[in-house]
Length: 84
Image (cartoon, rainbow, N blue to C red):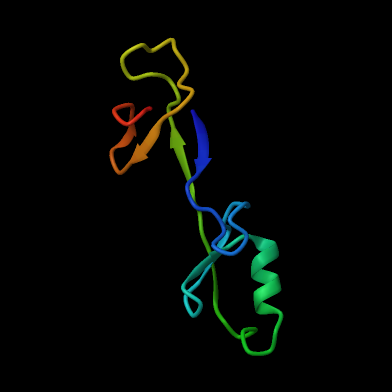
């Protein structure tokens, strides 16, 4: 089973989020967290490490030997109903 990150950094919108700042109400990658929290006003914020990886079976639920190219992730797992 592969693992996919389900949260992207709120600041750069590119890197995987690794932590949450409850004072900023934002998810950050390591680089953006450091950039925002190195300034005096924010350096006492509490950093919470997050585990945003979700294990996903990347094979089609109906055709077990076919690997999915596109999929939607919902609270129940993979859904192929919304593939365009």
